[in-house]
Amino acid sequence: MQKPVLTIVVPCYNEEDVLPETIKQLTNVLEHLMEEHLIASGSKVLFVDDGSRDRTWELIEQESERNPLVTGIKLSRNFGHQKALLAGLETAKNDSDCVISIDADLQDDVSAIREFVVKYWEGYDIVYGVRRSRDADTWFKRATAQWFYRFMQKLGVHVVYNHADFRLMSKRALEELSRYTEVNIFLRGIVPLLGFRTTKVFYDRKERFAGQSKYPLKKMLSFAFDGITSFSIAPIRFITFIGFLAFFLSSIAGIYALAVKLLGHAESGWTSIIISIWFIGGLLLMGIGLIGEYIGKIYQEVKRRPRFTIEKTLRSPALPPLSKKEKVQL
Image (cartoon, rainbow, N blue to C red; front, side):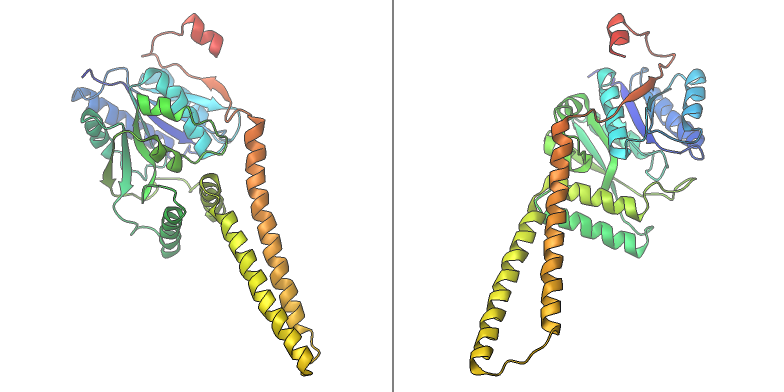
């Protein structure tokens, strides 16, 4: 087996505070792997600037000029973490034998990358980085994360527990991933669908090195909801079940009210009526909103708009010059 060309894909959004240290640590990792003859000399780190508003892209450009292991692509605007990551994977798969994705905040342990590569040498196409524990998280974040993974499993969606987007994928796994062309991307759910030989590498997640988290509660909830609605119609079926249950209970209440009326024990009142109206009205609005969410996703899919737009691509000094065909494509 020849030494593989490895590309480490790092999506970035307003990461100027942590980026110099990220570049330093990932460059050191690549150099050590090359010294151990585990990867080829053409390996590199590919940074994906997801429409940052700070100096993130400027720092990537400066580093790429003096560091042959660093290259990057700049998206035309902020497309979101999953699409930025996908843009990096699609770019890297053309000249890589395997690709590792990792966030720029250095919370994922970069020392685990060596074990990822060792697993690739053993014949694994997908290697998941899995957290050993969530002791560093707040109680709320830990509880909601556990609920999310368990709920996804109940819906029949296979996601790797305590795994985010720290993983290795072989070239053939990336080629298969490129066949999944949906606009609503949830990579944590798609990658397990690919099949191939997989394994896990366990590591301890660290505190963020610098800067602020780009995933506040609102974004985390939106991400979780996108994952649920992108892979299962169970929520719609649940609303249908609730509708039948409400109809059944309403029928019993109607029979009871009619019996009381016929027996002459009916009393006038508005509380029960108002509660019933609010209950049924809330169910209807919730059901319509949920159905609207699915229709909105269908609307996005049928338009077939590009999932990302690359504004600028850097070429590392260590890489060969662009061919005429590549220049036409860019």
